[in-house]
Length: 144
Image (cartoon, rainbow, N blue to C red; front, side, top):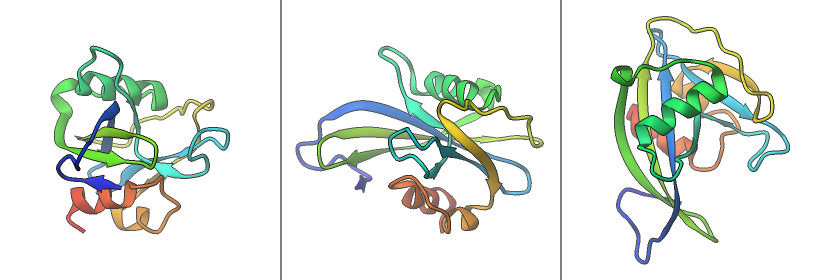
């Protein structure tokens, strides 16, 4: 479950950074998680754990590069919001970024982590099999 402020007794086990990568036509990039991964077979934006001592912005730039081969320049990355996520067995913080691209980049996904990618509108994304809690993030960011 996602919270805008930390819920009682919130104790983050780790930090995640994610990014809505958007084309001028309003479509965002979604990645299909590999079947053998946690939440396999679900769609989500590029995201991943922030390494110890790493800034969230540096972490998401690294994750985007690893997952898609897209190079995001730091000045094209905009921080949106930090959310607080509570799963049954642990808590974590979730940092949302946004990057607007001038055109559709060439993508090569990391096949060990993802099976496929798609460019979809935020509304189309809401009708897909999304990773848990992705839909509320899309609605929050895009005011849907």
